[in-house]
Image 1 (tube, rainbow, N blue to C red):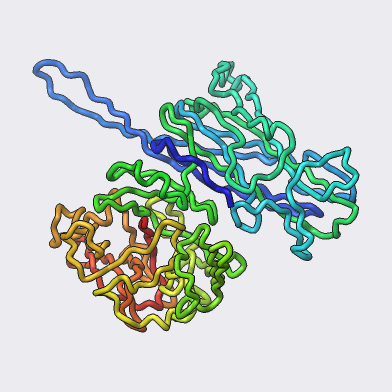
Image 2 (cartoon, rainbow, N blue to C red):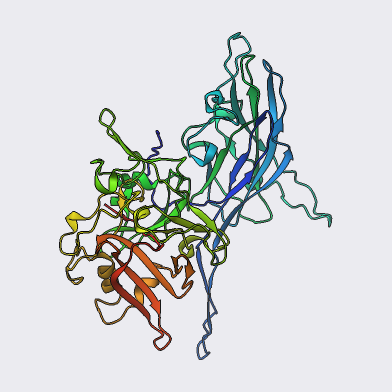
Length: 522
């Protein structure tokens, strides 16, 4: 998939949120809309100083806030007669509200079946009947079935709030975003993140906003099979800072932008596999780390490939024998996970088995934490190394991490961290979690609080041992280092009742449980 967008301006910020409409019809078009995270902006104020007076200082931090609100103006469904063309299927008004003056851009991509880049209307009967995206040509008697999309800017009415106060005062910040010329009329659904609208300046006042509408068109040929067809489009808001021109950054393109980051600089990047966004930071060890937990769902219906996933070992033996394939002509390795991620609430994880011969993963769907504090998903070690059976890996690799498994479910260009018997005091130590703990505790091995604080933000989401245990008191993080058949090396963060300090422990953990993942750049 051609997902690359040049990442030249590294101080821009990506603001992200999903809102989904699902609709069913002969041709049904659910719409996926994206809104914003809350990001930080520092503002300071201090009292005036008069000779002989006491000084009372105040510092105020006012975060930048950008949101998208949406209003469905008409249903996203219709019943059509074969051979006809219909426009204006579904209309949604999407309004951007920001409390700063910085510009933003809107990107769009097909995301049917949760796969970024899938721009088809999917048949409920047979995938061979799916409807591809395309532009209807009324002069072509052999039109294939197709669907397309169009955006329109909305000029906000400068009306009164009911108290004779003009809400907008014709402020330029209320003007609509500029729609890409390609989408001022019906055009194909993008198969990669494509900029479809932009605005040079923000909305400067949370009362004001700028809006655009989305709508779709469908043509069904006389030969199209009857049935229900559904599709999705994702809209992504990228909010710039200062005079930046907002650009997308992808996890999988890390090689293009990693050298531009300064030490302890944090940015956000998108995982093209599912559109989720992560904070990543260049830390004192020289590596770029994910500074929030991996949240990738696994699904047998959605194989992972070396185009976007850390699948560098295509030996197709041992742990990488089951449900793997390698195409020597394209150089693409594909892994199909055997088990779908389990959704659960509270602490009961129905369907989880403490096992090392199957790739179990789980998602806590009632969690409200976002950003650095996100719990992420839980993975047993078999899932973490992108395997369907890790029971063949029994050799202890603590003294030789070159024998660690090479594959993982991290994005392409990223990997699982390592633990080794190398001293954490050595620059470039392969005992990587311990190295971070050392560097962020004033080059000391006697304390252990820094690793849970800014800028690393290791969380304590508990772990799964049949059910979820230890939420908010312990966190366990996967590494690629092997211990025994029943155990792996990992790191644990605990809160001891008799010791208020965070406790850091690099030791082996049972590989059958469900733990958290932080990926690191290669």
